[in-house]
Structure formats: structure tokens, C-alpha cells
Length: 397
Image (cartoon, rainbow, N blue to C red; front, side):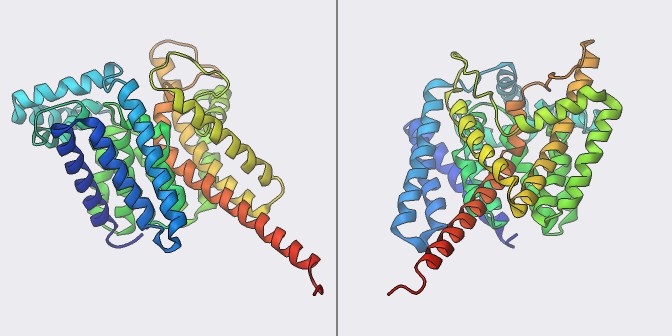
């Protein structure tokens, strides 16, 4: 990773957040979306300026897609869409009433719960409420602007790893943008994991451990995500494969055959979800998610087909699936524990809560792998086509 990636990401985040907050308080959230769309255009274009007009058009399309999705959510999705979102929002008023007492309570709660078992409410409060308190008049929309600005910073980290166009697709994912447009912790969890991976590569062990602890307090299984990302960036395909088998064995030991079956099902559901064959009218803001699910289904089908005929594609495919199986095994164990805790039967087909939300941690992983594999397939087909054309034209005047 590039040495100054953290400074670039911090600069992008501050510029995006401050600019969008100014727009929110002065002219409204729709203009904040326009401002952030311009930032998306600049990120796309500045990363591809050598190709001139073609990439100018591509950057414009990306900015328009980003704007269209976020504007749709602005009009059709309530920021406080569920009980968790309402509780996160209500926590700010407790903080602003007595900041020092709130921070003391939050830190004490995190320490007493031994971090891993900590509630995400005090963790999110300690991180975000001080920032929101100095962002002008409080508005729950600040969380949306924070999430979107943080996504731009995450993409900057990803670009420093070399996966350019695949990482940029994260900014156009309706599923990621859906969870960025509600008062939730998912985007922050993803960002902390990405920052931890960056610090690991910079060999800043102290900060790496500090960020990892914070990420674990927010999502107990964040360490698993960091492990998967580090293995991928280092090309440790065998370690991922062995870890996947070990994870399934661990699930078999504690959750039985049903847990193994659910791990396999969840690993596929992490790619294609919500179910594209069961479109449900009435789910708030879910229309774009079904469209994305169909696109990912087609992409995954193409990749799976070429896995059967190409060894190079097969190696990348196995690496992708190994990481997904590891994460899915964690989800299966959580589902098994929850079923036992509430006295419910755990059987094949019992998924672990809202996988559509929990898969956000692995969405950049999915997009990078599908993008890299599809690009590799396209290059191989193009080379074969060119070679065949040259062969047919050989010796002609």
C-alpha cells in the first residue's frame, strides 16, 4: 500500500464531510448529495485521466449513478428506518445533555463487557457524537453524510492497494449505499477494518491493535474480516483455503451438519442477496438492491462457468470462495448461538439474522474478486480472438 494513503483518505474524508455538512445546513441534503457526487467524479477521473475523453465519460456516468441511487434513498428511505437506528439517534441527546458523564459511562460499559461483548451503542456514541456536536445544528442526516464521506475514504485505501476499478465499484453499490443512508454502524465497521489492514501493512502495530480493538468492540468478528483482507492482499491463497476447511470443521463441532450446510448457503448469499427471485414490494428502499442482486448473479454465473474451463480463473475463484466460507462460518456460529440462547431449533436453512446488512463487511471483497476475475476472462477471450484473427490473416496481402 502507498505510504501516504492514510493522509489522502483523511483529506478526502474531511473535505467531503465538511463540504456536505455546509450544504446540508445552508441549502439542504439534496445539494449535499450533488457535492459528494462531484467528489466521486473527481476520484474516478483523477484515477483515469490518461485515457482522456473516454474516462471523462466514465467518471461522469459514475457520478450520475452515485447521485441517482443516493437521491432515491433520500426520497424513499427513512434515516431512522428501524429500532436500532432510532436508539443510535436517541443516544446523541443523552450525550449532548452531559458529554463527560456519557463518555465515562460509555468507556466503563465497554471495559466492563470485556470489549468483545460490548454493546455497539456506547462505542458508536464515543466515536461519532463528539463530531456531530461540532457539526452545527444536530440533524440525523449528519450520519448519512458521515457514512458517505467515510466510504470515499475507504475507496482511497482500496485504490492504494492496486485494485483500482474493482474498488471504485464500491461507490456504486446500492447495498452499501443503502446502509450508508441510514443511522447504522455498518460503514464505520468496514472503514475501521480497512484502516486496520492499512496500519498492519505500515507495521504500526500499536495503532493497528488500537483500531482492531475499536473495530472488535463495534463488531466482535472484525478480526476475522481483517485476517481475510490481509491474506488476500498478500496472496495467501493456501492459508485462506486451509482456514476455510478449519472453519467448517469448527462449525461441524459446535453446530453440527446443519451449521456446515448453512455456512455454504451463507457464503453464496453473501454474493447474491437479497434473493433476486423473490422481489418483495413494500420493503423500504430495496428496489435497487434487487437490481444489484441480479447483476451479481449474472456476474457470478459467468465466473463460475469459466472456473470449470480455466485453471487461472479457478485459482482466483477458490481464493474468493475460501474467504467467503470463513466469514459465513462465523455467521453460522452466531446463528447457532442465537438459536440456543432463545431456545429455538437450529436447522439447515436457518440464517444468522439480517445477512444483507452483515455482508457489507465483505462487499468490497466480493466486488474486487468478481471485477478482477471478469477482467481476466475478458483479456483471455480478447487475446484468443486477436490471435485467431492474426492466424487467419497470415500471408495475405
